[in-house]
Image 1 (cartoon, rainbow, N blue to C red):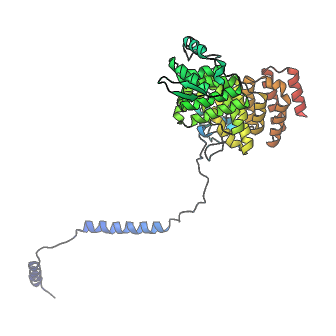
Image 2: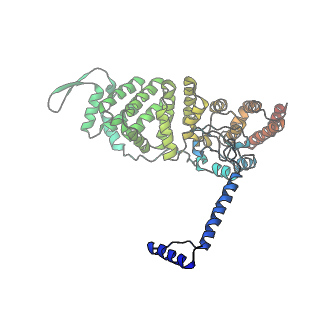
Image 3: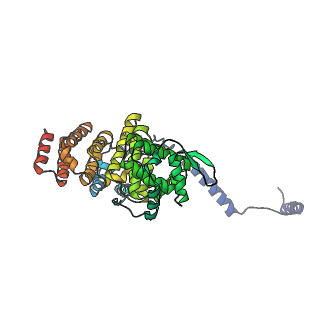
Length: 447
């Protein structure tokens, strides 16, 4: 057994050899053991957590909807009834029918809005606003030319010999002799009287009495170059002359005149149209539409119609607008255009549909080519009741037969069909149709 003195000497020598002595307090050792125990418990608890479940793919909670500006429906002008029906229907589809599909400029064509506030905001969009177009005045004071003195000068120079085809020998100011036509000589003499080429041409347009004289005059226009075609006063006189005598040959001359314009930039032609009076633009729409029936070229007519409505806020006359739609439908038949393509082309000029009288042939074409469901038919009939109410009196059976056919295509129930027929009859009565005729409609359609 080691004595106490030896233990003391041994401890002294041990401490002398070390520079410092490290030790851990018992309290801290206890904390380390507690943390280790906590980690062990966490590990055991983690082993008891089940694996993450695997869920199958579910339907997305959001749905892409068509933008209002992409919807191609020229007949749709939302009413309070449309908003109520849509808001109360399941998933809020436009028209209240879940299977209603809209023609769209995008890949989205469904009509389900999902929520009532979304549907109402969608229908209140500016895309469905119809511009308030002014009715066209019978005359315009845009051009205020003082033509009296100029007319007197040209009347003194003019004779019927101007249209002679034999060449003349004309002595010039420098003494030389030049061969030219009588028409060219008249231009030269007029220029010496300080009358420019535009005004002389406009004067001669009023003097041309035959198609051959008019053709001769148009040939002389080419000598003035493309600048003459962009002068608004001259352009208005050309349109007025052709419009007053729209023979097939004259229409072709007008087509040549338009093709000369097309050599200029679009900006120049639009600037010309904006300088013309609205009556002249309307005549251009009519003539260009008639021309399109043989050339299948609707660019000029459509350009003039858009400028008239969008820039000048004026509605075209019924004759011009019906001619435009007639040519558009004829072109669609010739090129086998789809209903979607037709609606795309009609959208930029849709505002006139709501204010211009539509001829029976135009309405019949729209019913046949563009109306494919009862929802669109209802809105189109509302337009007709305001712009063309006489159509109901003359083509009553056509409207009812089209309605019944669409009801069959949609497999409408008897209750829905009867309600739609009754609403159509009420609309016709408001347009002036006699009550007895409406009652006969309901009876015949209910059989």
